[in-house]
Length: 325
Ligand SMILES: [Mg+2]
Image (cartoon, rainbow, N blue to C red; front, side, top):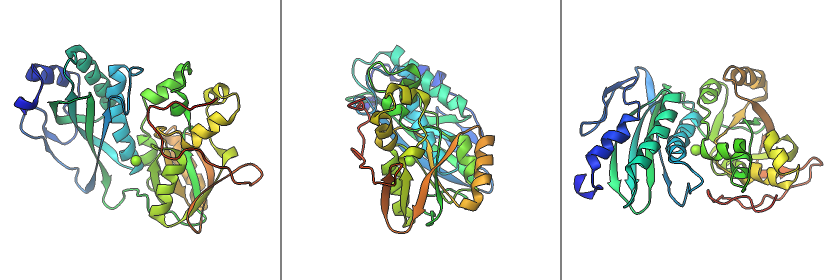
């Protein structure tokens, strides 16, 4: 890798790696060899995912280097949470543009390391290469008991649609002058790992909300071969979101299609609602019923009177702030 890498590559890798937890469960050989050697937990299956964050696409100058490192790992851990997995290891590929300062990359490593430590995982390896833009590509691996991974397929008509936490905060966090609590949801998302594991044995299907509630619910519906109906009045909004949009449409639109909430969206049989609520409470995670799965296809959003509500832009742009408050 040396010829394609920036000058001072080995020193940079050394300093970047210093900020990372490199030891952990099942890590036989960590960074420093040609590849990591990892021992899968006995009786479990591995769950693996990869995602990148790229300058100008997923983050901008509003992000500190620590934010970028945190978010690069957190978005991957959110996918593991949606599978009901326990996170174990991450591999990190850093794309470094000409002129990047070593101090900035060390700070990025600190943010990524903080997220890894918070969630008890080891960064077992990776690579640094020259690139046109700063980018961080993370591969995250977790484990689930054999045959117990929570999938998008499995929701049945009559099941409840539930979501963890609050929706729309991350999108509203991009509004200039947004309160720090909302901006933080945008830059330092919290993967719902504890809730994912606690709900894995209760839920029939799950997905994490990365692209926006309606879009991600559509993916779950498609995989399950069902439709869904959700109520606008039931959407969980934070107090900060309500205040910022003064009770207006911005909070509702951000909750429906804003994206990057990294909450979990779940299908749960009505008879298992008390068990789901108990599991979420144990994981200290708010859980809200927002609708039902129905026969058919597609997601219908209804207002308090039952009238259909049009959903604005589907498919969100990571760096676009909601246009109107
Ligand atoms: Mg996902």
